[in-house]
Image 1 (cartoon, rainbow, N blue to C red):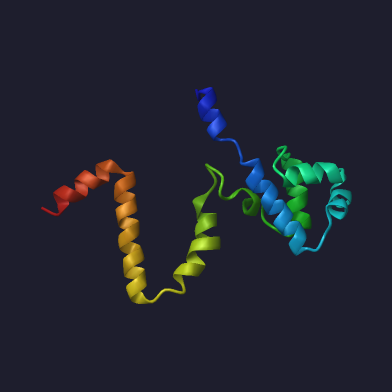
Image 2 (cartoon, rainbow, N blue to C red; image 1 turned 60 degrees about the horizontal axis):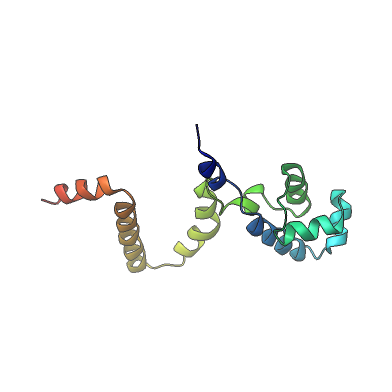
Amino acid sequence: MLTKAEVQKCALDASLIGKRVKTARKEKRLTQEELASLCDCTPTHICNVENGKIGISLELLFKISILLEKSMDYFVMDNPYVDPQVKINADIAPKLSQCDSQMLDIVDTILDKLIQYRNPSRRYASAYESE
């Protein structure tokens, strides 16, 4: 069973979600009032969500994702325990495609070092492998 502290770590970042709602809303050139009307809630509620003052219900997030033509992952992908593949595909892969072979070798080496740092057992295993 998880402790209270562990459960709190799993909480979604209301501020991050709110910023993404605001960004997506502005991309669609909608006002808070217009989005609120489409979502059957008040402009104040949308304002509070966008400012991270309150969390967002799954139902409202789903409506907003459809209306603003964004995936649910767009709003929560940098939060803990969310599929990292989304971030890889959305942010990292496009950057890697701009690299030449020398840059890719450097990135590969850096990633290997980060993985070894994160997994101490692999760090010791790789030390023995190189002997």
